[in-house]
Structures are given as structure tokens and as C-alpha cells.
Length: 214
Image (tube, rainbow, N blue to C red; front, side, top):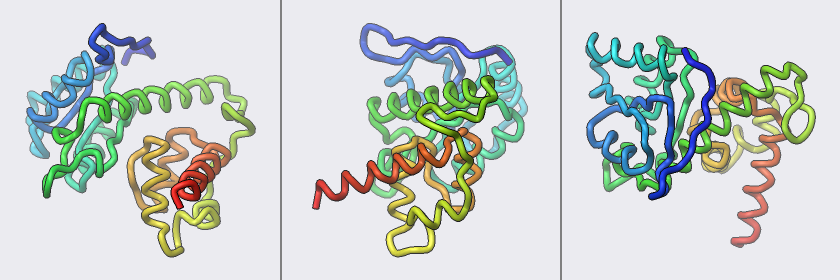
């Protein structure tokens, strides 16, 4: 798999992304194409054919992958399968509320601005994680890096309290890591090398925003 590359924008505001983006269906391809200039590969749902696996594998080896599946159970299962086969992939998450049209949940329902924001955040997160890991100093961008513990999730009100689920969803969206339960959140934060200080800052920012609204 190739190393990190710089990405830019076209004259019409589209992101130019060198990595291939894996989505689920044709409509997802159209939606992501409106937001960026990249190689976009659809899995055509859960039943991924051998031919499609081969195309994805080639893209992974030659360009690297960004996985952008629907924010629902089926999408998470497809993401899991892809991540198992291609562990070096970048993970991109779109918030459920940004991908809903009536009863339908899918990337195809998202506007170009939200897709660009999700892709930009994914690139930033992974580049920051790579930088921290390669430096191997344990230092975060804004202070000392400490892995988030399950007790931190509880203490910050992201689990085990009234309103924890909605608060956790808002924090996950702000961090660009996709909604998940409290147990998975600890693992996901570790995977993105998001430490306690960065999580705390996101929670505090959310609290300040809520106080300003009230």
C-alpha cells in the first residue's frame, strides 16, 4: 500500500483525493462524486463479488482506501468486512442525521458539503494519528496524550446517565468518528489516537454550545 499523499481542491470546490473511496451503491457513487474527485468503488451491497474484492484489493495496494459506508447496521457490517481485509484503510464516517431522507438512511442522501466535511475530517484524523505514532513520543497535538479509559467515558457523561446517548452522538459527530456505543467508543478513540485531552475539549465545546442555546 502506498504512503500518505497530499490532497487538494478543484476550481469548483471538489476535494481531490488520491485514495480510492469505497461506498455501497451506485447512488452513493453519484453523491460522493458531487463532493470530490476520486476513484470511487461501490461494493453493491453486502454480497461483494470476487471481482469487486479484486478491484478493491488493487486500489488498496496501489492507492490506499477510504471506507465510507452508510451509517446503519448493514453499513457497519460492510465496513467491518472491508476493514478486516484491508486494515490500513482510512475510516470516514457520516452522521446519521446528515444521511437521512424520510425512512431511508444512506450516503446518497447527504449533501456535497457534508460529504466533503466528513472526508476532510477523516484525512485530518488519520494524518494526525500517523504523525503521533511516527513521532512515538506519546504527545498529543495540544498536550500530553493519554488513552481514554472506560471510566473517562462515564465521568464525562457519555455513558450511564440520562442523555448519555445523545451527548455521545454529538461528541462522536464533532470528532468525526461515527456514532458507537460506549464500549466501542474507547476502542475507536484509541484507533484514531484521540486522547483524553482532545475528548475533554470536544465535550466542553459541546457543553458551551448547549449553554449558549439555552
